[in-house]
Length: 626
Image (cartoon, rainbow, N blue to C red; front, side):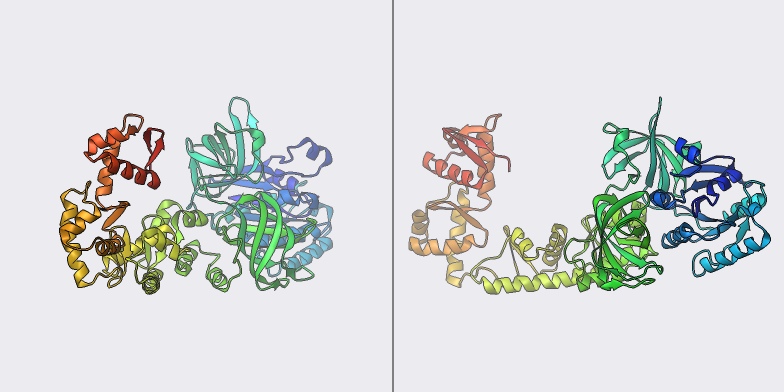
């Protein structure tokens, strides 16, 4: 269990941790000289049950609130420390507000320095505390008067903390591995070590993970959890990780970076369900500049309010946080915002969409989708997001958003209402059905507007539905073809009953013409010979054959000949056969392998040049990969 101290400067937090663990967490020389905690300190003690208690001692001075926020981001339990002689002070109030906004559920209150006070002063402080914690997570918390100097009450407090381990709900071990880095240093003979709290998932020796947002691959060389050597670590652990990697440098790692197996969690704009502190004097307005804290991250940015247009003190609403540089955030992560001068906490909230758009962020349909997301349940929100996405969602991005392990995502996708498209896209079956209907109507409209055309190729259908991903377009087309609602003719697609229509006489002429083209597909008769064989005027035949071209059954690569569509790949293969190992050949070599006359060879090669299958280089041609 990880416990964090909280409270005003000089209220005895460090001394109390020392009394409980025997460890002075002030490790910096400046801290020891000034008697003031500046950065995070860590200590551990063993419970009688064999479990370890981990303590994160945070600074109480307002100047070091950034460090305090980094320390309390992934804790299981809070210990609010209030000196009996001082009572409730400004940072007591702000630290409690931060813990509340971060969603901390469990904790107790330690009243220190009781050896300096008489009974009446202690009673007065206890009354202040009772007022302070009303309507907070510590409203019904136990209060323990202690003295770190005399040792009075320390044993009772220690027992209370050990008993609390049985009552609290520890962090879930599900999800991809994520560790928020709060320290980094180098050890001779071992290399780079980073420490932090594990938010989710687990990690083991030898694992390949990523340093984010730098996206540097690293390998785990060593692990310590709760200050003991370990082979693995899991969510809720305080962890030190010895890492190695080709592009790794100590100076390139900073507090706020992450070690993770989730490569897609980096973002510079997120949607949050935001609550404004009841202590604020005025409503939060749109585009307010703020300091943004999440885990050990600290960046500056702005608040773009989505709904309502301003948030009153003590109320909540939907907002988008916009910041730079990017930081790592997933659904359910907690954030704290402080004012532009970094003097007070304005509010806090929970991330509901870590990849929110730059444009259209406040569209009614998008707000309706965000309202459906349940900040307390990733599983409910995962399904709700799919249900609201009319054109489906990219599965990889969706899994990264919710930080699900592969097995967790698979369990959720068993839902009978979800359709998995080509392993790339997930879509609700009702939306897929609507998209099928919509595309049929769009194609019907296209045929009405283009009565003389046989159909349209796949890439033009993609243009009709620009907002659809390629997997969705492919799925809908395949399903419509399978249902008989769409016909494929060569490379063209059309609705039944539409496309190029030949009358009975034209159909008869085409039926008589087809065998003549099939006799020698790579060397069909010229137009006037074909017309003579059919006893028809060349101009009339040309008009009919130009209509047949629109059906995709024939092509006209040269001026006076029509080729069956399947002849073109054959000629391309013969062109490859004529080429040497460098992919080069002459007209003569092409003529020899095809048995076609020189003039027709030249015309065909010019056609292939135009199509980009070959390139003329003087007297030779070069094959082009396509």
